[in-house]
Image (tube, rainbow, N blue to C red; front, side, top):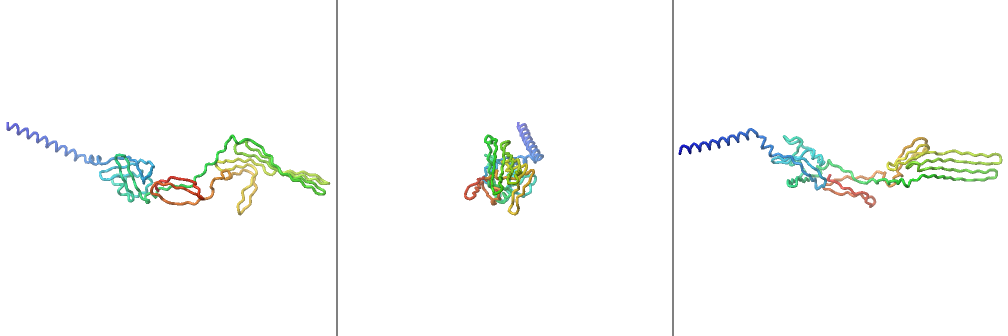
Length: 285
């Protein structure tokens, strides 16, 4: 009985030694298993400087660090000039970015980042005067019409009598925003020895206005605009010109510009002569 018992104990000990030895050999043959189990890809909601903009960022969680993808930094407009982490291309450690603080909430899959002004230098926003939308023309109010405009003068002397005049015949409504006009001068003179009548056509043109683009197209006779140092010129042919009288409320002169930065989401109000012209929401930058 004692001999049989001893053999059973030896068999159990031998099995335990074999099992321990086999398990150790398996772990040594696969050293990458422990490394893979400590790294995890994360796709988190990112809040930058309390901004409400929703950005999904790609992160890599290692055993002792949290890495961020370069594409995520580009989405956040963060100016980071650091080399990639060793064995992790296109990833940068959050702990190595100066001026950036992070707080990871695993339960909400959320990471909150607080960046300094230097890191936000790559993000620029342009806000300011809101361009006024041109008023729409109601086609039902554009009815065809005709206008006859005239101006006549009469003069009588001892041995002569004269009548001079000017007239314009204008049509509109043939197509949206178009006008056709023809004008002329007339002169009738009568003396004791002679009688004459002269008539001369002055301007004949067809004009169409494109209100949404503030452009006027003229075909025929027209007159160029004069500058402070020049005179106007009468021309005939095709003329395309800007016509800001079609949008009288638009600001065409350059406006003053101001440059600044904000670390938190803010509101920028533009006031001209004490009247608010625009309100814009700006993100950190």
